[in-house]
Image 1 (cartoon, one colour):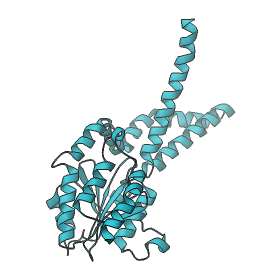
Image 2 (tube, helix red, strand yellow):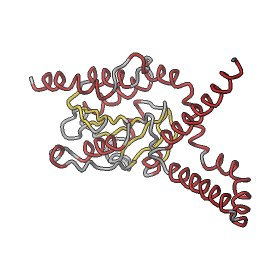
Image 3 (cartoon, helix red, strand yellow):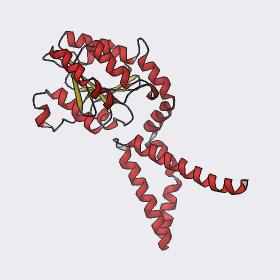
Image 4 (tube, one colour):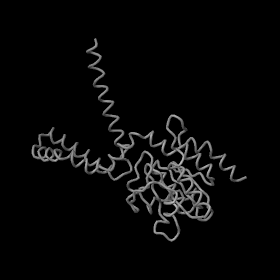
Length: 271
């Protein structure tokens, strides 16, 4: 009886594990150039199996030799993504460092307060589950700890990085001067500036969180899932960011939070 149960559960466990592994890999690489390479490898694997079934020995021999060095090639090609993935194993620790006093969120809020007070435009994207590698490569790649002084400097007028976006990955600034796609929803966002349209455009394609400071009014806005929450003060900004980066078991979803607070925030700033 026990042997029968083991013979049933072992294959089921293996199938679930492999399914989870493939699902996580596709989710992790989605939105990056590495996804194209991964799809290329999948296609090679399909061709290899077809050649094996049809008895195409020459093609089979070539692909066998190619896969022999494929492991090393895989590690080289996906080295940045693998390193980031291993770092995310301790994601709960990372989230706590985001939220602690003096952590990434506090530094970001203090920088936005200064920029808003002096009416200096800013566009900051914070990476979540889906990578932003394509957008990081469109700007100037850097690797620096998030700090209010550095953020203020990057968005200071008359600097080359003033008009681009800053991307934060983990607790570090990954790039500055990056270019984001503009939202094409002209009916809803025709009265918004380029930074706000870029923030909405990025979050329509990605699960990132974008913080925008208006150069004309000094108002702070947050874009999530293509929806923009405008006219936030430092307290409102902190409340939004704390909810978005709080551990999953103790928070609403980003969409639920924005929808729940949309009317309250709007009424507060219209009154």
